[in-house]
Length: 319
Image 1 (cartoon, helix red, strand yellow):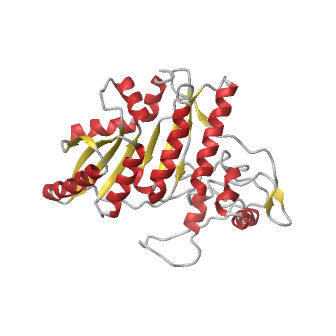
Image 2 (cartoon, helix red, strand yellow):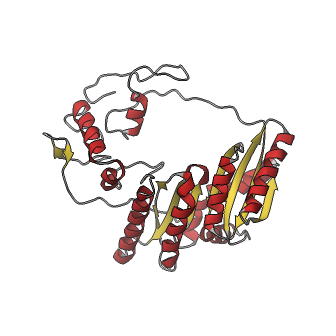
């Protein structure tokens, strides 16, 4: 539903289409600034017939990132490949009472149509891991044990409250080309490790697509900590963009990343977005202040300059 009340259908049920502009992606990517989505159709994929979970630990985060890229390049059928750095594993151990090695870990979800296919894929992944200095591998096919292993990754954010109980989490989100992940995530970790005594900032990553996050644990009542956290998040965004990546892989622009759009996409792209926004929502009633600046020069479509908004901080549950 557009700002003027017009109801628009953006696609049919065909698995693919080349009919007209890609309005579906335009509306979804607008983060509510062009209209309200009232109906969606989702594509459902079947669960794999057989799967297994593998954990492999690496001496450096760069080794893990390079290994993930190598697995993707080898064409291994992976449902997931998640990364947690040594800082994250230390926090997980403290929160869950586990004793995982304090190294960067990759967690693989390996799929196959038969148990033998899973074993074959596992052999390929293990060899690639060994080639990248992995050790302490653990593999499970039992559903209950697999669920327990994956709970380590699923509970990462909430485990962070154990590292700094009084803190909130500034959750960063950047994405780089997969072949650049090792360099960018390594540089990021060097910077974060320098301040981890003040601001614990463990890293997790969706390794196959170059998307990673740091959970910067900050006391919002401490202005020095807050300024430092914003500085670290700012550096992460620009480091990703300068590597040919994006300031946000999943979480969106919102208000906290408006300032990065022009650096990432260029002034012409931002002007085009503003033109679309003004055409479909001239009164700026749809999610104003998000994605694009609240005001602009309406004669040119160029965003007006203003103070850059800051990154959102998530209060952590104390229960």
